[in-house]
Length: 393
Image (cartoon, rainbow, N blue to C red; front, side):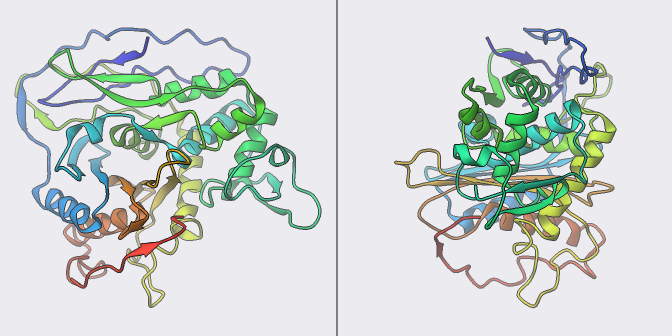
């Protein structure tokens, strides 16, 4: 039976993770409570949505022309949802935002990284050597890379460069199945959000951890076993942006006189959240999203604004001609103002990747929030994006 995370809901959904703090090494962890936490429902206040950001999200989705897509923006300080848009071939769809139907892909590496940082003595400076693993994980990737063709780098680079073999190797050597499962469930996997009517449920994410060591390695690297909703991805990144302290995500302000939400235990320590942030910054600085955040002239699209983020790209099945593309992140990374989540399901021929939409949503936000002198409006140039095909990441 899946856990239900109850919430203080304001016409739609709020978010309160009934998460447990990480156990000390060698300590046992009490099972997470099942069933709703007794939190009162609240009357509806005004919408938290930012009309300008909503219009930008809608315009970006329509321009990308995905099979389906979703964009969520959150103000991490308050949990206010600023943009909450979805698009399918048949029109907008709320379920796209709230159902964990698509693979978490490399976003799951955030969970594996958290487990490694919290349950082992691994440091960001530790060197890890690998050989291959760019497009998949085989048994040879579970051992340290040696000889010709091998490469070594600090663990600090692994998340930003999405090094599959690093996570496969370290997970099989240093983590148990329960380590990974407990960490994932603290971060929202296998949990649902109870909407304020008490009947509909929104999923954060789903995870099945294999027992076979090769399949376990593939799961740790994000190739199998996990799925995520855009809402779940937004929750996960908001948690990191807030230094590990949860906040209720909401679509409406609390009405005057509404009861306050109950405090929640922190699923992440501040130290872990800070180390994750440093690793996520690599994604945009030198990693899988460096190209998306760099203009053709070599200048940064967001000068002076450091971004933390994670990409994810995976085909749901070998027989499927679509590709799921993710980007989750927050900026400025050391003093976050906004969390962005973009999910696109693209066909073989596609216009945009998720990190490109996320970049332009961030440009829209910062251009209209005091940075117009340095950050350009992405809609000033109206030339159509060229169609693309081939590798997505």
